[in-house]
Length: 323
Image (cartoon, rainbow, N blue to C red; front, side):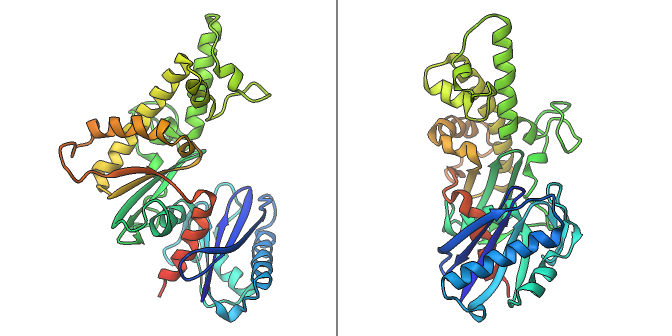
C-alpha cells in the first residue's frame, strides 16, 4: 500500500507518493496561486496526485490515504481547516471535498509545522528517538512535539505548531500575533534579517564599513544569510549580529528543553543550513542555561535532514498512523 503526502504552502503545493517505509518514490509541485477560489486549489492538488499515480502505474485501490499538511489550525478530526492566514481557507472542509474528487479510503489534515516535525521524527533527524521537539525558523517560528512516534497536539489540536508565540522578553519587540517579546519576534529568519538591517544602518551612520553590505543581494537588502556569510569572511560586526541572534534562539530553545525534555530537539528552516556555525554556539549556550545542566541525559540538539520533503513525509506518515 502507498500513501500520499501533500504539503500545501502559500507559494507551492508539493506532493509525494510514499511507500510503506516512507520513502518518496515520486514527487512533483505546482504553484498554489493562493488568491484563487479554494476549489481551484483543491483541483490542482487532486490533478497532480492523479498524475503522479498514473506516472508510476499505481492504482487508486493501492493508496491507503492522503495526508495534507496545511498552514493554520485544523479541527480535532483532521477534516477542516479552521483558519489559515495565507490561504483562503476559513472553516473549510478541505478533506471532505478532496475525498469527493479523489475517492481514497482516508484523507486527513494536519498543521504543516506539525507535519514537518513528524516527518523528521519518523524518517529524519530524530528517527528512532522516543521523543522529539522541532523548532522551524522561517518567516515565523513554528514547530511540533512528538512522543513515542505520535504528535502531541493538545486539547485544541494545535499544540506545538506555535512554539514561537512564547514570550522570551516581556514588553519586547512587537510580534505579529499581537503580543510583545515573542520567541518568534527574536528568533525567526525575519527577525535575523531585521537585526542585520539594524546593525548595518547603525554602522552606516558612523561611516563604518562592513562585509554585510557586500553579502546583500543586488537590491542591497539583507536576508537571513547575510550576517552568517559575512561572519565566515571574518567580519566582526556580522559576528556580533550572529551572536546576538543565537543568544535569543538559545533562550527559546532552553525553554523548550526545560518544558519537554525531548530526547532530540531539531532545528529546521533555512537557517539550519548554517549547520555547525549555528549549532555549536547554540549547544554551548543551552548547556549552560538549561535546568538539567548537570544531568547526563541531556537533549540532543540537531539540524533537520529532510529539507523540503519533511512535510510530505510527515503527512504520509500521519496517514499510516490512522486507524
